[in-house]
Each structure stands twice: as structure tokens, then as C-alpha cells.
Length: 372
Image (cartoon, rainbow, N blue to C red; front, top):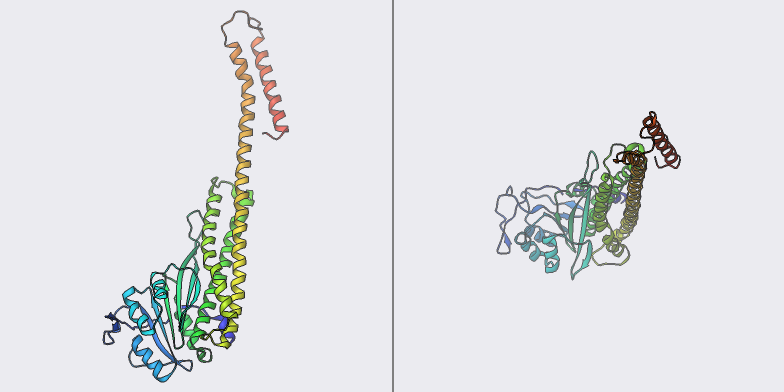
């Protein structure tokens, strides 16, 4: 049972292909034809029932209800028409069906008469050579799960987050898979949360990199002003998306681990506690990321303000120095006959010398006070 915590993701591809026509599927259609159904299989005593030809959902449910076991159907971005026949076959609630087809749902757990509807948001880290203001750090997708007494249906949205490897791992552990659909639900929840942990570690590295560059003057030389603020703000946006996936899921995981449910095997329920604990840790990390980025952004803005003040002090200091020769030149540029030392032979060099001495004195005073 310890293998539950090590599951890694992704849906066994199948050539199963179905066509919905008037609420029924054409089982005679070529299995090579593309379809929203990625895989459809019946599991009995934890083992996949092999058939000569790929099963349609209708055939799979008849086989499972006749001989025992449960059906696991995986779909990828089905249309309303493609999903309508499956929804009718398993008696899925219309509201849950609408959410599964339209996607963009908040992570949640809803209980209907004979099924559980669970929404997970998958998060994947986007690799990049260098983080900038336009870098995409995380990419999100969705996995919707319908859990029933004798069926488990996954509806996946997004280009990543395949469940192929996860299905293979479960098939390699018949003892676990024999626990029924709730074992698959736990495996998916554990897989999604493990993905959160990996993304959190990668985002932490990005934040550390930005933090070093903000507080290390040597690494900031030559960097255009405002670049760091753009990168920090982009990271905040990505962390916010991460937070929207993590925070709403904590309550459903706590319910699955604490409240007895008919559709969740008691032996599986205790493993949801481990998932909830890991999720709580990730949530704390994400909240910490947001607060840390706020502090880094404020520090960056304060540094920019200090730099601007230093620039203004330097500009003011040089303006004060230049004001002395400007004043002298302005005085001697007047058209008067009786000017001080105007007709004296050494008047010009004396006035220039006095001007230079005054400028040097101002410069030394300002430099001693830290203005230059």
C-alpha cells in the first residue's frame, strides 16, 4: 500500500473510438478513428479485463455489471455531444456534466445520489532559460473525476497532465486497484498534489534568484531600472494562479479523509489524510511565496526611490557648483563701464581663480556630506 504515495501521472492511450448518435455509440466504427475517449477498460479483482476488440463504454458497463468489477473511462476535452451518451449511461448529474464539459472550474468535491464529482486543477512548471517580465512560470489544466459504485470517469482539460503512467502504475498493483474506484480517486489526488510539491520547489528557486538579484548590487549592474519589478510582478501573477489551484482543494481532501462516504473504501480513506497533509504544506508554501514577493517588490521599489533620490542630489549638487561661474559670467557680461577690476591687468585671472576656488570648496563640502 506504500506505493500509493509514489504514483506518477498520466492515461494509457487506446485506439478505442466511439461515435455518439442519438444517445448511443456505434461499436462497429473503426477503433482507429479519433475520439474524446482515450481509454476504456473493465477491472475485476484489481486486474484489467483484456478483450479481443476495444470496449465501448456501453459494452464496458454491461460487462462490469454482469460479471463484477468497475469501469474506468478516460476522456480528453469531450464535447457536449461526445459526453452526453456516457452521462446517460452512468446516470451522471446534469450540473456535474455541464461543469465537466465546459471546464474552468474551481477545485471542489460534490456529492450526488450515486456518485462523487471531484475537480482538480493540475499545475505544471514551465521551464525557461531566464526569468523575465513575460515568462510563463506555471501552466494549469483540469481533471474532473466521477466516482461511482462500479465506475470511474476522468475528464481531462489541457495539453498536459496525462494519466497514462498513473493508469499503468495502478495496473501493476492489483491489490490496490481491487479496492475499487476510490483507489483511483486517491491515486489521482496524490498525483496532482505531488505535482504541486514539485512546482513549489521550482517556483522557490525562481524567487530565490530574483531575491538575490534585487539585494545584490553587483549583479544588478547594467540591468535596466524597472526590470526586476516586472519580473516580480509576473511571478506574483503565476503564484496567484498556483494559489487558486491549491487553496480550494484543501477542504475536499479533508472531507474525503475525515467523513465516511459510501463510495470511498475505508482502507483507502485514511490515505487521503496523507494527501491533505501534503496539500496543507504546499498551501503554506504558496502563501509564503506571495508574502515574500510582496516584501521583495516593496524593497525593489524602495531601492528605486533611493536611487532616484541619489540622482536628484547629484544633479542638485552639480547645479549648485555650476551656479557660481554662471553668476560671475552673468555679472561681467553686463555692459557697464565701472566694473570691479575691469581695467586691472590681473583682473581676469584673479576672478577666474576665485571662481575655481569657490567651486572646489562647494564640491568638497557636498562630497563630504555624501551628495557627490
